[in-house]
Amino acid sequence: MGGKQAVVETGRLRLEPLAAGHADDVVELFGDPAMSAHLGADLSTGGLARTMVDNRLAYDGPPELGHWAILGQGRVVGLAHLRPSRELPGDLPEIGWYLGRRYGGRGLATEAARALLHHGLDGLGLASVWALVHVDNVPSLRLAERLGFLPVGEGFHYGGPHRVHVALPDRV
Image 1: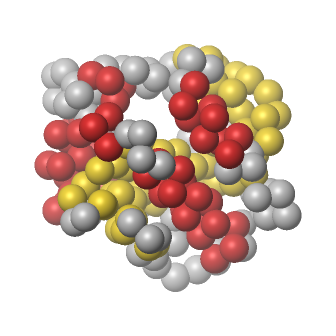
Image 2: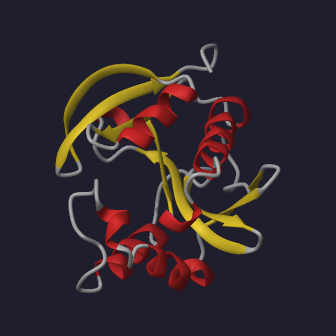
C-alpha cells in the first residue's frame, strides 16, 4: 500500500475520491429517508447528512483508503467507502456502499462494490476486506453474497444488528 486514493472506473461508473464538490449531491441523496433505513440514525433530518459528509471529508486514515463518490453519467448516484473499520478491531479494512433509491435495480451497486473490492484486494494488496451489513438489508446481503463475501458472524454495529462478512483474495 501507499500513495493516494485512486479513481476507480467501471464500464458505467466512476468512483472518485470524495471531495467538497460532491458534498451537496451526497447530502441530497441522503435527504431521502430510505437511504437511512439500515443506519443508526435518520440522516434526512436535522442536518445529519451534512454532518455525515463533513465527517467523511475529514477522513484521516491511510491515504490510499477513504470514501468515494459513485458517479454515473457524470452525476453522483451513491457513496462508498473502503477504510479502516471503526466497528471491528485492529483497523480491519471495511467496505460499504450506498446507492440512491432512484438508481436501484440496474446493478450499479454491485458494479461499484465489485470494483472497489477488487481495487482493495488486487490493487492495494489487502489481505481481506470486511463488510458489515444490517440483518434486514436484504439487497445488500444478496450483494455481499454475489461478490463472494463469506458470512462469519453477527454483531451489534452502527446502532443495530449486522452480519459480518469477509472477502479474501482467493475467494472473490
